[in-house]
Image (cartoon, rainbow, N blue to C red; front, side, top):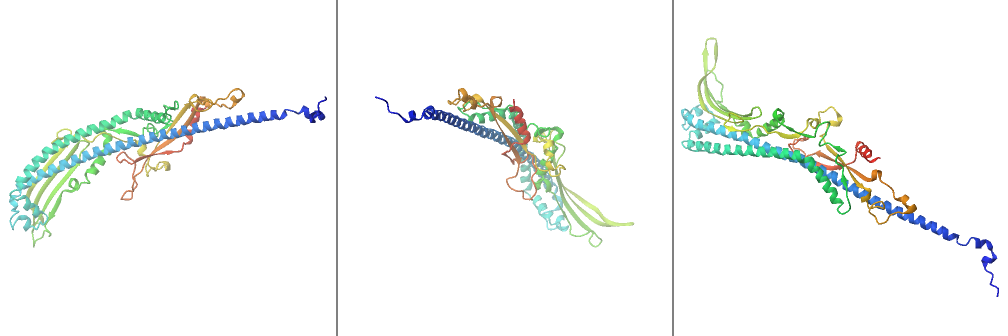
Length: 453
């Protein structure tokens, strides 16, 4: 029985085209698979790059925080040493004043201060009369003398404690400076490893792309000042001490409220002159002197003027804290850490427009991940290309993926000064703060030079 004729038999041209759609389908399938694989690999690369960039930011910011804390640590220790130095100035001032008061009590008798016709009352020395009466009080000696002896004993022990604290604070500054760079390196690697825990190795470059802490305009950002370079600390120390009015202004003066002339020839003046000074770098000395004098109008041949008639010594006091030869031992203005000379050059008076603002400590670091550790088709991913698909595998320059991040430490008061002035950067105030910044053109160029084969 003959087979029925089909459409293919009727049309031989159709028979020759049978199966061509399958080839097109296979081509579309392969292309689709390649696109899916490309998207997968691109996604993996993007995720890896994003994580590496975030890790680099974390590392750079951690380094900046460490820089800021190091600067603030020096500021806090400088302020602690400053407080101890001011205490020395206060102690010698009080001791000198007590010695003056003790002698005043012993020498005040001729003035008859408790009598209605006392010398201060006759001379109308209204400021001095109450003090004169107090010093002439019969129990004054019983109060002043023990106070002087007790105070000196306590003060001597206190200065010894300040000297011990000074040595300890200087040692901590030196230790921090010596161990800072190794500690920073360890910290940065720890931060990087924590971000990639269980995900393979990540490397922090040994040498930063930019490191103003070690090199700022040709010098380190901070330096140690000692010997004759301690002038800045000395000046700040003296200024801080003189804010205590007892140290700077405990003296007084009093005078009769009239001029010396023929109708009323006798007048008087009483005074207490006092000073506390920092001489050189290792000598805090205080002195107090009291005196009362009278003047009388005298007419002589060819002259008529007031001349001194009587002088009373109201007591004097001396006290010193010195490295050698003083009443108390004092090692002197401490060595300390502060901004370098180049960093101090960044100030409003600088002629260079780029250096009129406070100095900023910048830092840039590069992190790398080896291709074998990346979660991509060329690394740890289970999906890997084969055959002709290998063209999509890709390869990082020098077989590493890199990311760069920059940070900055800057000086800024949390609140504005009361006097409205701008606070200048130094290591006497702990106002150093940290943040991330964009990578500069120089940093990018340095990173590219390391990455390109």
